[in-house]
Length: 243
Image (cartoon, rainbow, N blue to C red; front, side, top):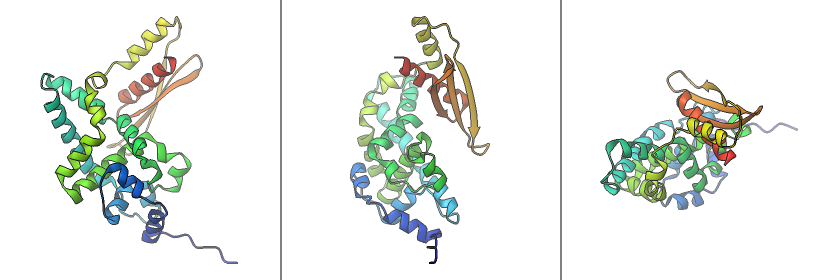
């Protein structure tokens, strides 16, 4: 009995894409996209690389990042006229950081629709902060190309409305490493948090992964584009676990 031949290239892409009904995803976004554009927006580089270096969604992500940043910045500028430039800059960071985007991706169900390579699928790539956060930007890039900036901006404002409204309380970020130390002191825990980090990816586009440990166990994990950012998120997770 002959072994079934594994599909590769465009055939593998089409088979993987049509295996899932994407209508619920488009309904969650509130837009219509062509199959070609949606397929590209959902194609992670891990899938593309495993199947003959197909086009992936990174270029769309680049566009979407710009659309998202401008749309949120303009809305914050208009919605909070009494806030300083420094404040609205921090507020924007609170709305569009990787963790916020990952939360949006989970609300929209992005992970169920992404086309991932086998390695990423085996290691939980459909729920990795960085991967699903990037997929939100890729979708925005696709919407921008097919529908134009006005529709893309309206999509951002609809999906991020709650986060923009609460930006003054969540975007003016806290120093979580200091907050964690203060919490440990409040709990009379005589321990010193230990931070460890590692990086992956090319030198020009690295992602840092950090952990914070005390009491002999890892208490928080975080990712970021810098070591400082990754440790910041790890400390925040540890603080929330203590709280």
